[in-house]
Length: 117
Image (cartoon, one colour):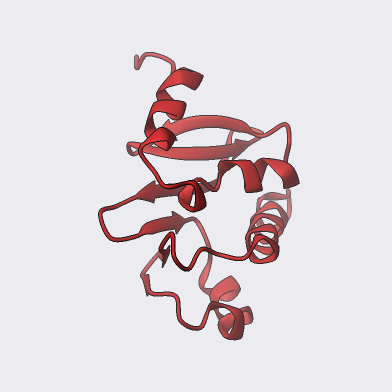
């Protein structure tokens, strides 16, 4: 059984990232009682034990994971200019996601996690 992830482990990971790449505060403003953990070596926000969003800092960018193709298609105009790969969106400290877009990401994922969604 894996050892529980401590808040200090997440804080240590986030401390390595430039401030605009630390999405956790923006996400927690929308979902204040979400759980913070690490999954696949990345900070992960969970709601009711289910992964809401994951994000990771890389050398040239930060990535957010957990968004569906439907979300990407629905917000194509707002996401123009951001790189992506299958399953992730990328941003840099110079061009972070606007806070309102992060809120839309969180709300979209919350809706997907609701029973019967």
